[in-house]
Amino acid sequence: MNVFGFRSFPAVALCACLALAGCVSTPQASVAPDAVEVSQTQSDLRSASRQLRDQYREAGWATASGTAAFGQLANMLLNGRQADSARTPVQRYLDVNAPADRDAADIFTALDTDLSTATSLAGTVAVHARTISQGGTVNAATLGDDLDAAEQAIASVARALEFFSAAVDSVADRLDPEHQDSLRARQAQLRVEFERLGEAADGIADRRRSVRNGIFS
Image (cartoon, rainbow, N blue to C red; front, side):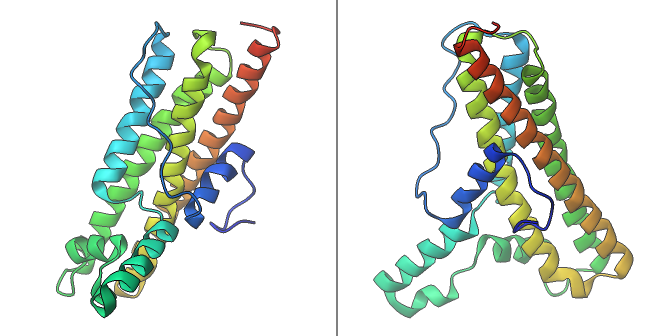
């Protein structure tokens, strides 16, 4: 059992999650536009990964709390107590989607819709990554870029899991039990896609090693 409350997942996913501790201050470099010819499946994976990362970032779902907390501490040391009033990404999200006067049904709808979107995006990346990991047509020389695309998506989904866990916990007492259960089920679906992504990324890494060892191309 891990910090997210679900079973152990592949090593690649674990490595992505470790970034949440705030030990890495800068993200991985984005996958560069394709400089050489790649298969349609590879192109689809990279496009889906970019779309996921862009949408998660724009929606505010992919902010690592560890990094955010470090930044707030540094800001407080530099600028004094005014930093105490700084709003976290989750708080800013709830300011918009769950203000004090918002009806419980509307709060549920906003969270349910966003969780559904986050899960759908993660599932799309997982499908393309799994195709590559299981022998889909690829330019073998660029499998490293495919692995990068999968790993970056994993990191974003890991942060989104943490984000939505905090958001749902914050409004749970304002929702009826049925809505709470529905949101927990949505979170579970996102966790499933997270694990599928980790498994597919491990498969891509295995395929890349095999290519390097001349086992297959």
